Length: 328
Image (cartoon, rainbow, N blue to C red; front, side):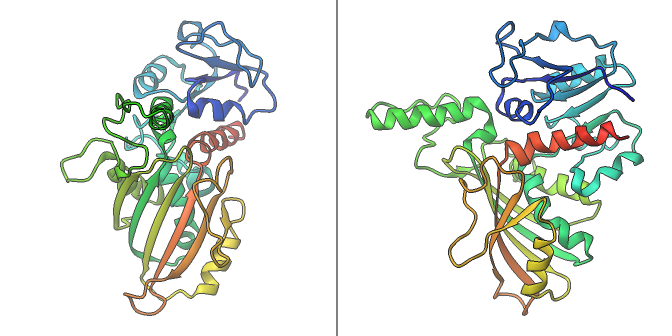
C-alpha cells in the first residue's frame, strides 16, 4: 500500500528531532509541533504544522513522539488503512497490540489484527539487543540481574534542560533549580524518578520486566534496578546473566560479533563502552565481559552495555518499524 504522508507528532521533542534527522527524502513528511506552529524545522526546511492540520481521512503513517494522550487521539481518529507507531507507553502492554523491535520480533505483527505498533521503552530495547543473540541461538537464560544508569535526556527536554540549568547555577554559586527533578541531579545519583508501584519496584523497573517478557514471548526472570545518573545522553546497563547450561567466552564473543548490525563489541583491556561512546550510534555497545565467579564455571556472565536511548532506544527503532511497514 502507498501511504500519503508520514506524520511525526511531537517533532520538536528530543525523540522527534532524532527521528526526522534519519530522513534523506523529506517528501510527504509532515511535522506536528505543539509550540512551534508556523516556524521552520532547521533539519528539514519544513514548516511545523499543528494538530488541527492533520487530515485523518488519508492513509498515513503516524509516528507519535509525544505523550499517551496524543497516542490515544491518533488511534481514535486515524482511518483503518493507516498505521500508528507509538513511542509512548500507552499501548505497550496491551494484549491486542504488538510490541516490536524489528531485528527481533517484527514477524509478531502477523499475530495481531492491529494497525497500532508499540515502540518499547528505551532501557528495554538496549537490554533486548544484548539478550537476542543468546535467546535466538537457544542459550537458555535462567535469570537476569540488570542495573541501569539512565541519562537525563531519557526524561525529555524538560529533564535535560534542568540538569544543564543546575550545572550553570552550581558554577555561578546559585541555588539549584529543582522544579522537575525535585532534588539536586548534578553530581548525584538516585533511583529512577518514575512512580513506585504496588510491588515496590518503580515503573521503569517494571517496564524492563514486563516488556522484555512480551518481546521474547518467554518468562524470563529479571531483577532490575533503575538509576538516574547526571549525564546528558545514552543509558548504560550492568547486566548479569545466569544461563541454564554452560557457555564459554569464545562462544559469547562470536555471538556478539555475528550481530554487528545491532551490537558493537568494545572489550579490550580498559576500553569499554561509556555514556559518551554510544552517542548518535545505532548499535548497542558491549564490553567488560567476565564470568560471574559466584556461580559454577561458564554458567554466569557479566556485561556492561551502552546505548543511545534517544536513537537506538526510541527514534531509530520507530524508523526501522516504519521501513518494514512499507514492505508489508
